[in-house]
Length: 548
Image 1 (tube, one colour):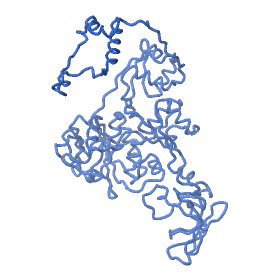
Image 2 (spheres, helix red, strand yellow):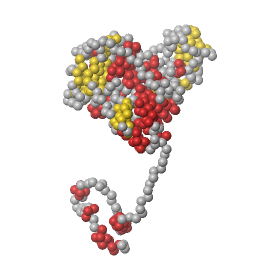
Image 3 (cartoon, helix red, strand yellow):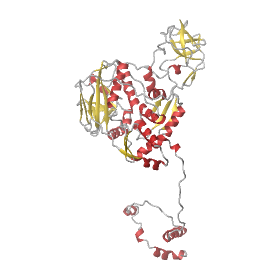
Image 4 (cartoon, helix red, strand yellow):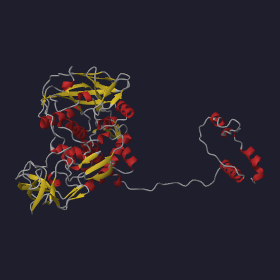
């Protein structure tokens, strides 16, 4: 999981903490940090500039000469972008700058020396293919680092999570961990309420592999390019931007940890969603163009007949978002982790969605997630809600665990103040109620890994800080030095046999004698069981070889 720090600071303000302190805090609390990366460190020396003059190139019709003010001096830059105009604010990489392994130097373009190059969003990996240079939409200070202006200089923390910590596969999940460590409030992204009660789409769950299915129809959706801030965050997190609708679904997945999907409603003519088992041998084409053959244990999202998506893993090619899409059906579902894992592994498909479903997702955040999707579509795609929220199925309630105060201290080997115990558990989202010698604790719906009292002690210990617990060497009470006569006899037998040229063979303890004899039918074995071992007879037999 890649954590862009700039995005993280929007959810929990840690702007006063440097990246080394954050990685240390995460590591000490049990979240292993694999490394820190600066995704745009391949770019050095790029600055903001203002085009002062544009003149035709005297020797090339497809080039123009510009004079660019970068604050402390004017540069002459030759470009093939004939659309550039005076007064535009641009990104310039002057002589001495670096782009990947390319060091920028003065270069002669058909008799005119160019003292740098303009940058496009393609060089910044913010577009697949750029046809023009990067222009800033408003005036910017001249001579400033482009990475500072575009917020490309923030680090990305990469964490390695164990299979039981699926709750940390999101920005909010990591922010929850840091809230417990630093005792700072979370700023959960705001959502708009969804008005309306119409339910133009019928939802039916026919298999228990789907616990809950939440849907919402959005109309008048404008599919277009995503804004810069959204593309920047997706790229830093390791995903490639496509269009605003698909990017929003990926953004919400990374933000909340709950996989979501968007269907083109026009491609579901009967306005029906049926979650069912696949038929044995049924085939479908996925979004990546791959044709797969299904088993009757695989779970499908269908329109009642035709598969629309392989549940929890990937959408189908015949229901995806395109530039012609105007109405969208949003899906927020909860699937059985075991079913998703078996299907994904059998087909050799691993996606961001399946990775999270396999580890268990929060089954109670569906309404928030779908409202978050709707809010971003309203803001970035001019969409409107065309229905009420359709919510089918329900999730199970987490159980209550009794936590004894004395048990916490016994296991951790130190006295943890009651106030700290309560504060830690509350900051991690647990609910508490005093009871007898401790508390009745209810885990939050996103913590599937908390099942026993010892799990709660581990949570307290890792946040309280194992470094606060004094180390103590284990006390080992020395035992008696004498050995039993049986042990002495066995050792003497072994020594005698090896001195006569025999080798001692240590075999598996549990093995069928017939398996041994089948190796060589002409070989005779004598199997001596411990119950038949006679120390006196053994001593008598070997007495010529040693003195008792």
